[in-house]
Amino acid sequence: MPDNLYGSLLVNCTYKGVPHLREDETPPQGGTPGWAAIPNPRIGPWLRLMQKIAAEQGLVPEFEITLEATHHGPVTSTPTMFVEIGSTEEYWGRQDAAQAIALVLRKGLGLEDGNDVGSWQGNGEKVLLGIGGGHYAPRHMDIVIKDGVWVGHLLSGYSLPMDTPSQVNGKTSGEVAGMWKHSIKVSYEATKAAFPGSEVIAHLDHKSFKGWQKNAVTSYLQEENIRIGKPSDFF
Image (tube, rainbow, N blue to C red; front, side, top):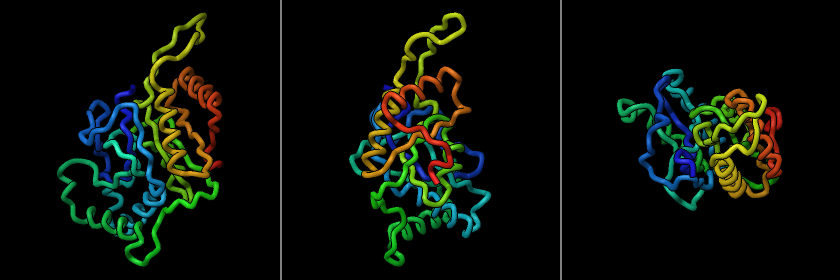
């Protein structure tokens, strides 16, 4: 199973330019390799809420509000996301960033006025399953920041391990081995479980794939009857 697919998404308040987790690090939060948690439906709406609050509190542009791709546990059957101050230990104690996150929780859970943010009503909306790209998923982020967009798992390139296929006369020959299909399958199923009644649509970061990788992913999604969407399909 792919070592880098552990299960949970993050809404991240990160000091600009400082990565939260290197791709070669083992996440300390645990998890089971090759497993994906049920993502919390509030991820997209809370990301947009955090962007709004961070701007109002003067944290932008020093801090960048981002999503992080699925990459760590813990193992849980409860719909899950992390909301965190990323970057380095120097910034974890920043009270202004912590207060912004506390306000997101207060508003998002409806503790302020009884109106929560991001409850899934299950009335047929489309949900983005991100495939490909880097740790902070910028091309998927470009879609998720739009009002009304729902998001499930985001699979970065390092969660899609592919063995380079053999070549015959300059063309790819045979099956593309590796655990990438498993990563897509469990992430799709977990996202579907999080959003009952939805249409889960795959969004590919096309530029992050080599030609043979994109062809393999596209063919597999078609085999599994998973629709591939353009950005405009989610608005």
